Length: 237
Length: 334
Image (cartoon, rainbow over all chains, first blue to last red):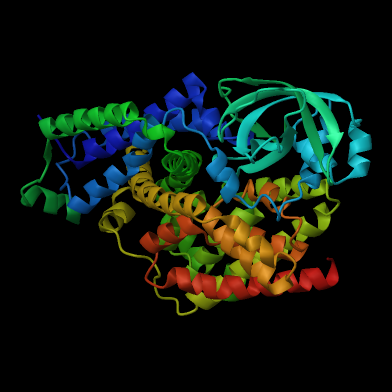
């Protein structure tokens, strides 16, 4: 048995249909897409699988097509992201991406925090980061020195000695390419022995204290934890 | 027909099943070995891989939708319908095609196969370009997301209206200037001659054939473009741009460069743009207008779809227009 170009095209479609199906059923799509675009996953799974089956059926009586090297190379290119997804199954953005993003000087997420604070039942990275520079937002969110908070995030940067380290989460809208890192400084506080490295995932319990135009979390308890199954937050949650 | 005849007469070069099987198992072994070697622990590779895959995973369903619309046009819309539209004078056809983008609720990846098909069916190249460039900005989902993103900052009306107006201006101008000669701008594909005649009258089989052909053709270039965008995001620190945040012209140029590098979906880019509050609103507007018109992944897709220099021509028109729009916006609103 030999496969012609049409069969290979169908395999390309079906492979993508299978990847979307796996992302859909396993819930792993949250590693790549935000809540606004999750709907593309079932669309891709069903649409591409049907397209592959329909294409094979529609072309079953046609003569063999020439498998040109460039077309084969194109199909290989089309399959590369599937290989990347299989190889880097549990990979996620971390401190390198956070340092590369336009984060430390160009961004002021107050506007985004106001969006998020419409349902401000919890106080997260976005609210803490924005409210540090915005006294009005702090009042709106009920933030004050001594308020207890609990955050789960990854260490995006560390400094020597007992100086505060940066705990971050990425907020995504459509896909990981639009991720915006939002950080909060954590001081060692009453935690005696603390050894953290970049990209460690931590659960930090502490209280708020005023910093220089920012809220700092003074840690009471710091625990190393596994990365959550959905490592990203969204502006809608 | 011509190609089918050619296929019958020439010895078919097909790939034996054992080669495909061997390639599959080699790939499985390579993946297992790479995972065993802890490739995912390498932060550069992990960052690149996650961004690369996420752009493709998000874009391919839109390519599928675009390919489906393109296939439906090819198979079920009679050629005479396009002949009538094609005979309309350019001053009417180009703006009308651009405004028609409002009815195409897909982002930029989906509009390319549709525009290509419309041009193949007789729409003027200038109108096809205007439609393709306007659809990712003017469609209702994009305008709504811009409204929501800037609502909290109290600039929803200004930013949404300015984005729509400036996007429409760029699309119409680019359409007129690039397509004014009237000659075809498309790169020829072997299937085109067959596809345009084989399925007159319409059939589900023809629809699926068109769809698969367009999807596989466009998809591979989206993959290459996504790799370029992911490489830029992984290797180039964006903080360098923040030093020009306060400068009106340089700020707009910097954010336009960032829009090209990030290759964001036009349905999400407003949420990223609104966070660049160190930059003037006009610069954010330039980011929102240029990104859906040209970015890293689109540049590769345009290169494969249109003749040489098309990307440069679009950039040569879109960048000055977006910059001028940004400056006017800052002077009037900012």
